[in-house]
Length: 388
Image (cartoon, rainbow, N blue to C red; front, side):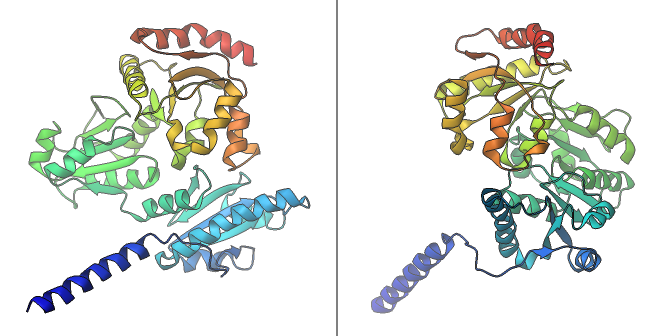
């Protein structure tokens, strides 16, 4: 009997070892072309064939070899994403802005080197870093239900920890409620950039201090939500409220929405803070930033972008050389935002152009909470004049 158990245990060990090995095999391009060249003859068929269609709208293939290589790198991102998502009913294609100008016009494609996702009747522009993992994550988020249900205390605690995200949560009678359906339709318009949650559970609603048909809006890093007035709310009312309150006082630069964040500047200016969250000094500095944001959340002229250098390791050395700063310590400064539409999704040139007008950098430690806000507010008009 003991020998049988030994054999069984050894088999289990082998299975676990094999599974672990297989689970760590990262995908690589298998050589099969899955990305379509979308043109006037096949675009309608392609849109009907797939639940979602992901299109890269690009300039004509250049004659310069270096630029050709950059284009093929972007194409390979799509090929790898198409390979990984092959069983998800998502199509991938390329649209040439010159050869297929008619198709681009019909589909509403405007910005070259941008990715557009077609889902049902919606067109969603991908505003993240053009890497296979970021694009795949974005598309998988779009496949999920636009509203996530919170049904128990554990899910509620997970919701409360999502302090980096713009999110809404509403309390409704059930899935058949007309007010919940209006909430769902609104969620579809903002998916995946704004997170929507709902609960039908009385206990969860009580913990969140939600009344029936009430919707709370959570700004990133804020302790308390803002309740949308005039419940029950129509779809139009929710959309208007989200659009009016969508720009947070403090937000984190993330790979999945970095372009949307960067383009949403204040009169061409961003106040930017570098801080490593896992570092003690960085954590302390970030807590100061959060307090400043909470104290000034109603100030429309204050917008802070937090960058964690640990999440952009390829850019850390570049930032340090360009700005002459030590990113092992928290840093803060003001930058002039350059239009990023001219150079698409290559992340290093993106920061090269956006950060070259770094005006002033300060190291913050033991600084009064109001100083950051006062510095920005004092210099805002002067900075704007110096950049024009």
